[in-house]
Each structure stands twice: as structure tokens, then as C-alpha cells.
Length: 280
Ligand SMILES: Nc1ncnc2c1ncn2[C@@H]1O[C@H](COP(=O)(O)OP(=O)(O)OP(=O)(O)O)[C@@H](O)[C@H]1O
Ligand SMILES: [Mg+2]
Image 1 (cartoon, helix red, strand yellow):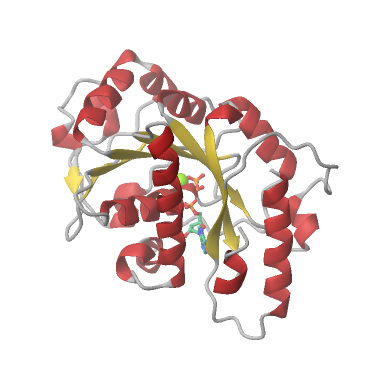
Image 2 (cartoon, rainbow, N blue to C red):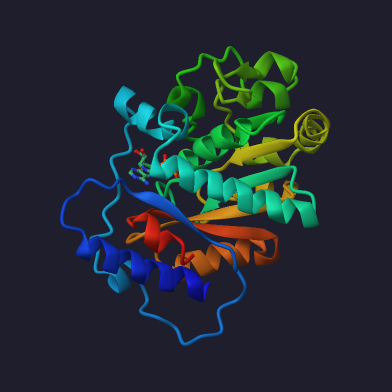
């Protein structure tokens, strides 16, 4: 984790040096989620960075939805390139131990999990001959169907409740080889459904059909859902919102999820140029 804090510090220096605001915030990736042994930095990452740590507006507008699909709409952009780097890193790790299912987690709400899940899924689906499925496992505040602008007739809950088949809840994203299973029905008991044997069976069946399955989850702290989904997955990624996520929250979430299964930490919202990114 020490690298994450160092990356945040460099990102902040870069941000201060920047003269105009024309570089969009982009994710950076740290690939060493081993336990922290260095002296502890200040309690909150926001104080380390000197940023406000304000929560983003949670409503989803059409423009917001478009921004989330940046890897699709602007494949040559710097951000899309960052997600391709992320995909390549995951692919390299998958060569050592298979990563068929990967959960996207973060300690708290609004740190960018869905954004990362969508863009990672899109760039992964852009690889040649790859079957990719994105599943919205946030049945409390689902965003995937809406963010992608697709109209699914069914969703994960209906499948887990036996009301429809998996195929009846999968939508193909036009112009890509990405399939999506979102949420339509929002059940009263999302945790129980995710922990049910049906969920394990569903992922087992889908793993036979897809090369990679990306699972979006709710916040880890305070809810069992993301622990359940990460536990069913081969690996998980943790999203950290630069200037907002508390360091102790990241550590608590890594404890909850079992840090040995973490394949990386994504620094979301860190602003940095091409040259700087090479350091991470
Ligand atoms: N790098 C970024 N730059 C600018 N805006 C971002 C970035 N990442 C996420 N956002 C915005 O922040 C908000 C929250 O992002 P997102 O929905 O991906 O977070 P989340 O962790 O999935 O939230 P939740 O916990 O509610 O599911 C959205 O409005 C999104 O568009
Ligand atoms: Mg989300």
C-alpha cells in the first residue's frame, strides 16, 4: 500500500504544476497490495493530498453516462489508455493464476467502482476474440444498465430468484463484444441472494462461457455484499478515490475482503500526465 500513498503524493504535485485544467482525471494503478510496513502517513489521504475530499454528485445524467463510457467513446484518449494498461496488468497476472471472475470494490460509496467496472469491461471486450460479461452486483443502487444506456428486461435478481434464465437477463452492448447483466428488480434481500447457492452456480456456469466476468459491487464497509461477491471471485480490484478515501478505510476494507485476493488498487481521480504515469 505504500506505493498507493506515494502515487497520490506525486499525483498531487502534478496537479499543482498543471497550468490549465485540460487533463481529465484518470485512474492510476498500483500492483503491490501487500501489507503496509512503512511508517504510517497522515490519517486521511485527503489531508496527505490537501484536497477537499468532496463527494461527487450522485445523480446520473445522460452526459454523465457518456463520460462513464469514455473507453468506448474516446478509444484514443489518455483515460482509455489507462484502462488498457489496467487490462494488460490483469492479463499478465492471469497468466500465472487464472482470473476469470474479478470483483470491483471500494471501501465507501461513490469512489468510482462502477466507472472502473464499465470502462475495464469495455476495454477488455475490445481485445480480440474475448467474451466478456459485466454483472451489476449492486442490487441496492444499481447503475450499470442506465450508465450504458441499455434496457434489460430482466436482471441479476430475477435470475437468482429463478424467474428467468441467465440468457434472458443478458444484454449485448451494441457495437462491442461486451455482454451485460444489470439489475431490474431490486430485491428486499440482496445479501441473501448473493450468498445463495444459485449465485455460486450462476458464476460457475457463466465462467464456462466467458473469458472474463467483471462484477460491480456496492461499498465494502457496512455491507456484506461486496465481501460475498469478492469471495466468489478469483480476485478483486480496490478503487481508491484520490483526495477522498480515508487511508484507514482502505485498510479496513482490505481486511474485510482478504487482502491476499487483491490484484491491485486503482487510484481514481488522480490527475497526472503521460510521463508521470510511467512511474506507477
Ligand atoms: N475519475 C473520475 N473523474 C470524474 N468523475 C468521476 C470519476 N470517477 C467517478 N466519477 C463520478 O463520480 C460518481 C461516482 O462514481 P461511481 O458511480 O463510479 O462510483 P461507485 O463507487 O460505483 O458509487 P456507488 O458506491 O454508489 O456504487 C459518478 O457521478 C461518476 O461519474
Ligand atoms: Mg456503483
